[in-house]
Image 1 (cartoon, helix red, strand yellow):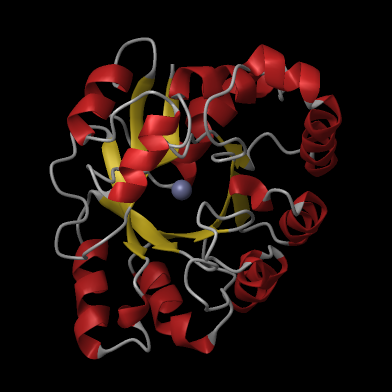
Image 2 (cartoon, rainbow, N blue to C red):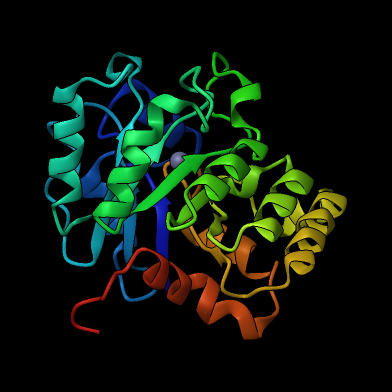
Length: 272
Ligand SMILES: [Zn+2]
């Protein structure tokens, strides 16, 4: 079992359909919950929001939460109307944070126009999740996705809990430096692979890359800093669970696969 701290519900948009088709699955919410919300797989999770603010976070079952996602350039510079919509989300108990999409949007994470949102997260005791590293869209620009820009935010807002989504991959060295330097920065391990893969074949053919991942995880050396996520529909979640599990010492797995996400996102699971 695992808690999926980073996945998407694109619900039959073209991006979702393409990603799902790559792994032989269907991008609908119904499909996701039927396939993965079982005793053997996801006990809960956090949806990283996309699309209109009006509909994000709707119809989530117990133990599934969301970060309100700001993936539209039209939200910036932030107007009072958008700010208030974000605030209403953050007052919803199902909403555990804000997700920023640097790279997909040409705005650096440390841009001043995000500061009201950082303050709002602190005020509402919610988390800030930030895309870092390789984006899924060819039009997204890599310079905005460098982990180093999270250092400014973490230092200037020490009360803010920050999730570095995708562990900055493949900017792993920079990601590790930012995490070592800032006790308020955590990483989710979603999206390190995209598309169809088997763990066995991937580990055989990408051994040096796997060793790099293990090296920087060990360098940080803190079992409380990492959390499992899939980035579904980018990958099959069961196969991805196998892949992430073999990166860690078995004694870390309860924390990485479930406990850390619950603690960092302030989630108490129901019925378990
Ligand atoms: Zn994602």
